[in-house]
Length: 566
Image (cartoon, rainbow, N blue to C red; front, side, top):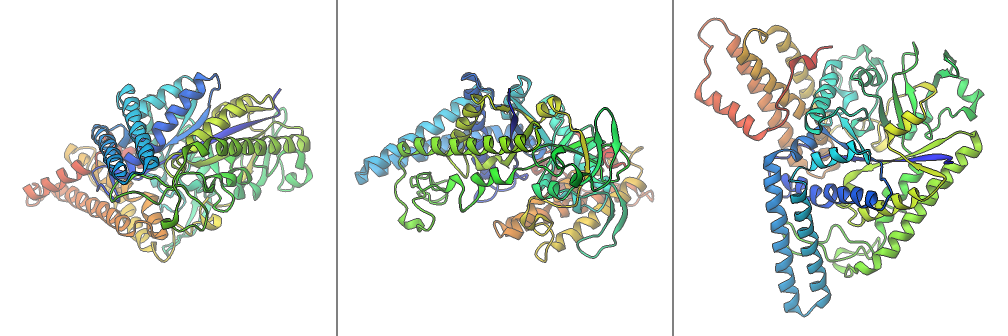
């Protein structure tokens, strides 16, 4: 009988880039992730199942990502992307043959095979990546999570109605595209805020009586979400269940440490107001296990034998032929990649990772006598895109743990069904970003964005309250389009890329583009609502502005203005 469980949680997300540039920032991000992460992960799920090792991965596919992957323009563009990659690899092969470098010729042949195989896989699933993952979810092989519509940083939104709209829009997209409603939610950036008083990060007036994120989540019938370990370790005991729930004081965790209080090895219901048992559970990330993969110092992907991400042959869309070689090796001094050296490293890394999981579960079981869980969460794009060998690592981990009688490999939904939480806690605010707080998304580089965003929230709230959209279909249609732009400008990605200095110009451009479209559409709504007869008609230029927004922002086609209602 297993003494614990393992839940692998992968967070798949990209900002909205379809119809917004190509390279180096734009649709190529989407094509690269599909080719190097999403299709290889799908193949890993199928291979593990074929080998009688159900993978039971919990996979987050954000609504904004699903909307793009399901769109015909992505599907057509991705076919061209794969064909271009095959052509590029063949050109490289010819060039390398002219050099007399047989090993690089061999590597180019491998790239031809890699992209041709992806093309075959894409055709086999009829170009519909979301549907393929949905099929695996229905078969019980994986669980799919939803998220906020555009991955907005929820704790910093000014209105709770905006948070509700992000959650409702996200769940509606997931339901429409997947064909079912997920029960689990990936909180963007694992960012949580309790209820009560809230202070704006930019000097706007604070608010009393904010609703805790856990209640906003549970109100949408979602049962669980995911947090950084620091929040769980700082939690306060509120309720406990034996035969029935009873209220406890904050010292309960100190009195009964073997109950599993303040442990990341059990999910706990969350209720910050203390008025009753919680309705949604939080899983805490096991940082000690996760750092074996993501740490820049000790992480497996930094092994010298693995494929180097940053060095490519040729300009745009260049392919990779070199290995990491060492942490301090300059790009110009990187050695050739040798695929045959990878298998033993993957075996070594996977076994070490599984040993860590087993050891952590046994330690918890011996200390408490309880069935614990290791929840290891990562950005999905780490596996395959950033770490080329990552999907094969996951395959080896899944195969190894499925053969281990001490460990149950489960989705988070399965774990909650088999092991219902018996504790309710209150939590502090925090995220999985630097410092465990808001500093990546609220700082001197990006606070101007929040000032604009708050003004847009206020304007949209005013318009939905004052404009006669219930009686005028044209105003209703334009207001829905403005809501779409509001969702898009709220994406946490724009602050992230500016703060990190990764794509500053692109992040600012995209944020301001959606702001401009939002303001234009709001202005047109006001014009149509004017009853003087002078402003009531739209000009050809104004109609073109509406069409331009529709052409570029092909997302959330079924917006409901009631999403913003409390």
